[in-house]
Amino acid sequence: MERLYPDKVYPMIDGTFVDDLPGAFKPVINPATGEALAEVWFGQEEVIDRAVEAAERAQKAFKRVPAPKRAEYLYRLGALLRRDKEKLSRLLTLENGKPIDEARGEVQEGIDMAFYMAGEGRRLFGQTTPAELPDKFAMSVRAPIGVVGLITPWNFPIAIATWKAFPALVSGNAVIWKPASETPLMADALSRLVIEAGFPQGVFNVVYVSGGDAIYMVEHPKIKVISFTGSTEVGRTIAERGGRLIKRVSLEMGGKNAVIVMEDADLDLATEAILWCAYGTSGQRCTACSRVLVHVEVKEALEKRLLDGIRSLKVGSGLDEAVRVGPVINRGALEKIHHYVEIGQQEGARLLIGGHPLVEAEYTGGYYYAPTLFTDVPANARIAQEEIFGPVLSIIPIRSLEEAIEINNDVMYGLSSSIFTRDVNRVFRAMQELDTGIVYVNAGTTGAEIHLPFGGSKMTGNGHRDSGIQALDVFTEWKSIYVDYSGKLQRAQIDVSYDE
Image (cartoon, rainbow, N blue to C red; front, top):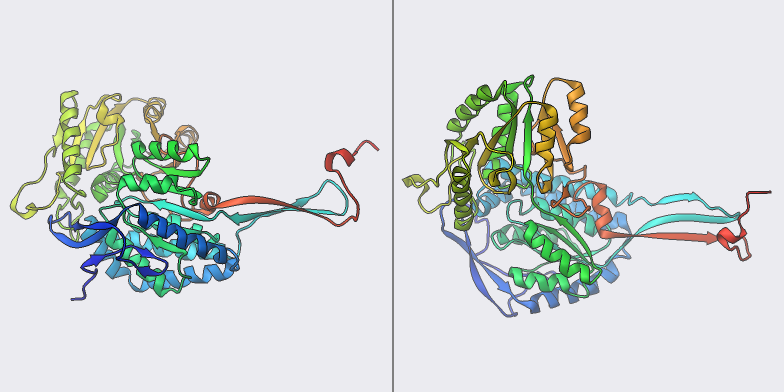
């Protein structure tokens, strides 16, 4: 069987894997078994300095490469990702733990993003507009910013990286990517494909550093943009450090997403969707459903369906095609999830199923938590307000759409929401009033597509978006250009008169 990863992983800088910088090896752990897969070289500030030096030098030339030519590199990379889709998917499951079909879907996101952003190489549209003076031309264009730093999480180790890196590259920037400590093998695999695709050396660099050294990256004066996905706590620190330097910072953080189920909903469809978006990826998605706001008239019927569905979910190694719930990422995550379950019980929520780590023989060594369902959860309970990031779902009874919208909006996050109803008036009311950046109708809270903007409001983000053409705004500056061919000085508004 083909080996999917090297024994030792090193930073990739200036098109080369470097092993001559200060640092130390750390193991990469398979969360399904607890076994070490490989070792990765974690560096210190010196690795960031070298990456910045290479990126700054490369970007000066890369920004002059015509955008359609920059796009050709992405087209080639997309083809390589498609060629290696199955291999990459298996590697992702080994390192991250998610079921193999989810891993295939994530790799497909990277493929889609490569081709989508490559298409922008022949657009990158600005605007032309009439000038207010005669014999004068006015337009706006996008310009690259320079060296950008990407900090990405372990739960989507390739998809989120491509959401950020590909619009940055097609815009003419150079990238320094710090992947999550838990998932360096996917970063190594992508960096090898970047080299194979023929990208100019130095425009794409990968560094493995600790969280503390990542702050050095945030504050580095030659890194002009930071794009971060992760926890709200870390995002706040990045915003504070970057803000002092007037640095562009894009943040995509947590969620506390709700599915609203009205009394006229298709309960079978709602059940299927809730099971998928609550327990897929073991609940380790920023868009995972963690609250169900269900009308009291159908609450009991929905609970029965959910319990039947939960009992049928197979938990285990994600490489088993029949598994629907894999391990959580590490022991710390396991302990955090169980702590929240204990809080829920202390707050008076009624535990219907789950609520414990899985310790049977088939789960030995891995980090598995039983799919968990609470009901009669107060809307202001901690398990209904705080992000758990695990397979824990809370049912909150509601009596009207107005009450559901109020409860949905009364959390610190604003990423994703969903409503199940057959009433078109309710649909449009929900679309208008739900305060999340993503709204689904008769679908769960997950399933975003790469050609629409991804992100949310409140403590979920700071107004920027990943994916879609809106991602280009993170990595480009707007430049307004005026061409005066009148042959004389025209003083804009001073010389404008419409009174004659």
